[in-house]
Image 1: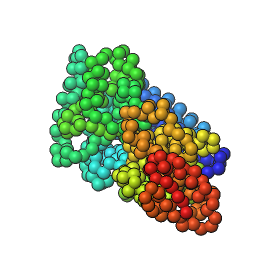
Image 2 (image 1 turned 120 degrees about the vertical axis):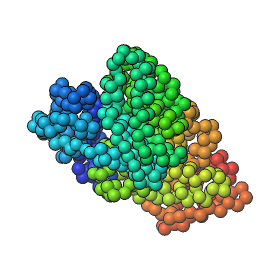
Image 3 (image 1 turned 90 degrees about the vertical axis):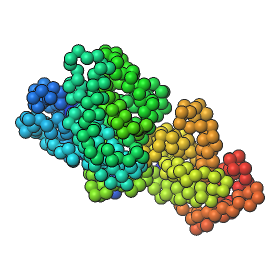
Image 4 (image 1 turned 60 degrees about the vertical axis):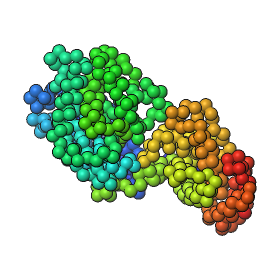
Length: 516
């Protein structure tokens, strides 16, 4: 990849705006659509409009909430126009779906903002949430809990097929309103919500048939806020919500802490959005009731849901029929294109890395899941050159840690980042390594070094980005590894470059390296 090469933005097919008008908040995401079915979020804007607030009394959207929504949508439209958005896809969910004044509200939005909003049915909303999850997570069997402001969605799937869903017509905003009176203490309100929600769950017949080995997935703003609080409490080193796994035993103390506080004290909690402080206890009570009812001991957070479901439908229409088969490879390929990496070089380095991993298995004895880590590192090893060539392995390390990666755990992301950092002569910074001690162990350090040496050799064997070395075959003889290369042309540069890693190879594998 040449330093200073133009970003993939020059290949943008279309820039779209997606507006999600929920019962609690309105969100705009601006998305670049690229060729071959890839996309990237490039901007977003979120406002708390509380559109569903006080609706439970008479079923009407209140004038003050409507005015706030129009003001917000005008801002969204201004940002879309300034950003060169050519098409806006706007959808509304539970609050607008139930509103008795829905038609006049939609007409007012169209007249004042020039935005046409489509009201999703409960089924359409559930399907979009499912598509956002299934195309970004490598969890073959799951039950999704998506807590919105005005509704709660429960979606059950197996073998990447959606089997059942239920939409309960209350969420964090409406539950807070329903149980905020009667002079109840905060913890009493939470207990009432738990009891109420559990009774609603009992009415969902198919929920009783869900197998015990299903994995729970949490979506929505309340889960994202839960992650932020957990990150502060446990000093978690990554900022990535997606694929964060939380044990119920770690969730309960946070819930118990928050549910007893009054509003002023809740607003002071680090990581808790002030605009969500009043409704988060209701959402946490829903989570508590759900995990207790289904006897769940942990759940995984998804940073992707309805809006991502729309993105996949727009960028990759095939997802309307079936989900992406390999979510990790899809997200890696997206990043390779977005970072303008040399795709042929990347493919060749990945192939050589896989060959090395398999042929040296008798030495490293790593199970197959470590091949996934090596593949992530191999595909993104050069992405740091988007910043600058010098010290680019370290820039790649940072970019992998903060990239949008699907189908891979946080631990695997950290290990892949450090492997990528080793693909030149970089040593692992032990201070950086110590930051991730909750995700990696001392034994992992040796694993990273072995994978890093393999990646360094594979990258060196395509030093001129020419594919001169087609394949390799390793013979392990006594105290040496004889690496025979199949070449097409002069491979002097590649072999000389790869042999520079012989010292590190000896340290990691306790074998001398010869390349023929």
